[in-house]
Image (tube, rainbow, N blue to C red; front, top):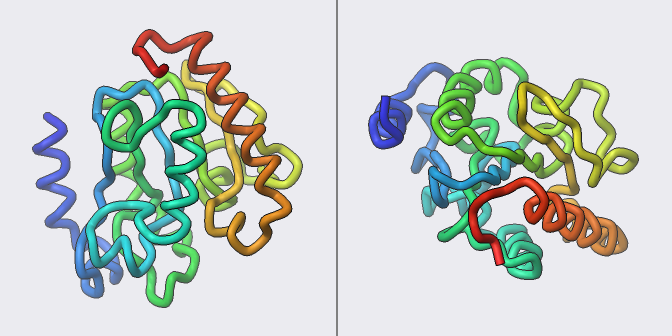
Length: 189
């Protein structure tokens, strides 16, 4: 299956109730050949309206962190979510919704073959890294699983609510930059 075929098939998905209430499916954005994949929890209102992840205030903050380490959502990374449709009122995606949507994310990872996955926030980190993952204690640490390094950091929306965590998040991104320089083949500078 090609990337385009996967996205077209995903756009037809109605496996859970989120499909019936979405304005737009949010498949992701970036380069499918990227060696670094960012994963959030799910689309919010702005993302649902535009069909792209992290486009509201939290996306603007994420873009600043990315730019600080020479990453760009259009050029050298890919950004996706645990679920592809907006949960009502921006609530956390339910475990069963994540279960229904996980095959799309798994297929994206299989096609991309990233070297690094960065989980943005608790929900993605607990699903991708481990059920007991605590963002406030384990952020910025790398874990290897099936040949892919995984790291969890603060969700940009959480940083907007709690700005005193922004320096910790910046340290996480600087650690990511160092890891990219160490193991990635593509040019990220």
